[in-house]
Length: 226
Image 1: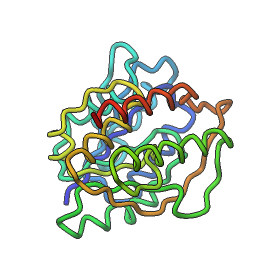
Image 2: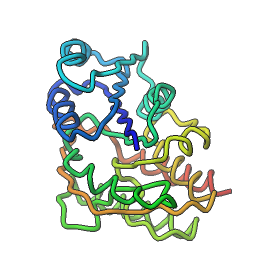
Image 3: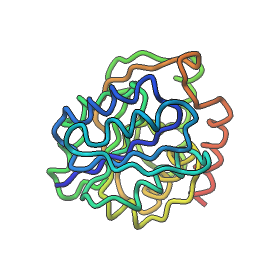
Image 4: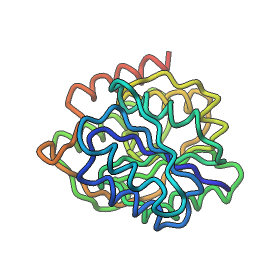
């Protein structure tokens, strides 16, 4: 199955070249679609330099104004031609070396969605509050939708492209995660989880998600349930 990787980018000059190198090194990405969400740092220049430096070449899309991760994913999705879509954050918290684990379940034609769970193996945490906030989101998801997932907020989500295009994404920001989770579970489509590695960065190192994004996530989980 042809894998399309969408990489949303916003001011990630420090890690951008390394993450693209790692994605290419897997040999599993048939296409890499990078969506620059109006970066103000050196990210655009880095992307131009890397565009045709190795296979596969980068398909670079750019927002004139910053819109958020969800908007970047929707823009990237419009260019996807693959059978599977994997969302790859541009920082180094999630390691493309886990791609084989994430893709293996799709050997079963019944599997439509795979989440990489940070909680199915020992991993570090960026903070106590961030870790338990993420666990709480999973509990709320399971209570609302009758699911049994362990990491709703994971950054590693892989979908059958046809399904992701069909559900009609609307979110602009980090609420992409609860939106896509809610819409998939409302359709009674099971989410298959696999253990992944996780290398959290701190807010001082550029982590962008904030405490109030957790409240927004809870609201969206409720909204898409009812």
